[in-house]
Length: 403
Image (cartoon, rainbow, N blue to C red; front, side, top):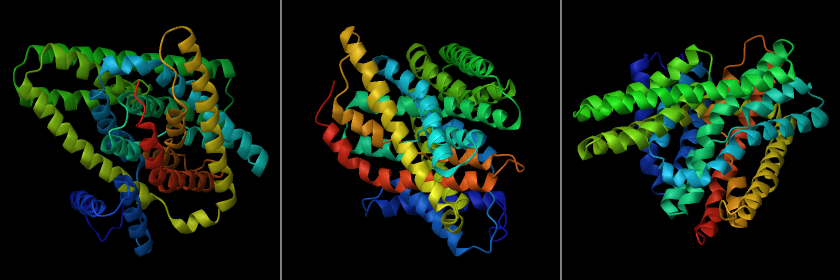
């Protein structure tokens, strides 16, 4: 970000954190999700200072902010609860992402005449959900644990799969891609990334079991969160999937075999603080990255994209996931998902920081780069402002049922 009153990086960081604290105090007085308020503040700031040049680096979001956020969420997942939802998460995070991207691409292609390969790039950018605002409401309303685990687990893993699909989509635009090769690349990337996170998580868990110092162990958790991402990225694999896996392993293996109560409290407190700061900065940057003036020029394709996102999400939730759930009931594997839960899963498909980061990372010479970014930003704003502020009604209804 450049040109912000001549401030240097440290001063910018302090300013962002200060704004985040002010926003946190304000939202206590109004019924608006915290993340939505942060995006609004970012948008207002960008509009008030149009003469300033705000340049948001996608690397800041993907490498600096995102690993910490997803590690915190993964570290808190109880594998015993997650085991009941793992099949649903797998359906939503793998085929669900691909189907959503394909539906968005098809509708944009036939409705607007956009090239199919470029339309699929947009589909890839908006296919991964980012329900941070929804999870806050989940906790406040005391929603069913299994439902919250399903939503959070999906968001953790489909960020990774969405980025893999995005990379393949970019390659398809820039050079010829064979379908079979793309499929193999997808599964190899996911598998290797999981392996990197698994090994890293186990190694750190074994070290933690032999160290009785909460400061050292907390530092190790920080090194694991970013180390897993950096290592996977260095091998051109998915850093997000590696970090998610590492967090789940440390949170379940490391926490149980070697952490003292003092260490658990220290790690929980540190990561709770980091998650608060990182969430605040991410959504402020989302607001700063979007200019309302540019969105007006692409309102037609944006509306088609929003419709496509809702249709794609409905197909994934009501047909794919619901169908898989019915098969699970028939096989005696798991109870059927209530319709009220399916409604929450459909409407909680918010898009956020990951979609914005992908749009910003498009190569400068990419065909129709500005239009693709504007469409993506428009979808993000709709999901945050419309879905993010109305999901509480559906969550409250779903809270009457627990499985």
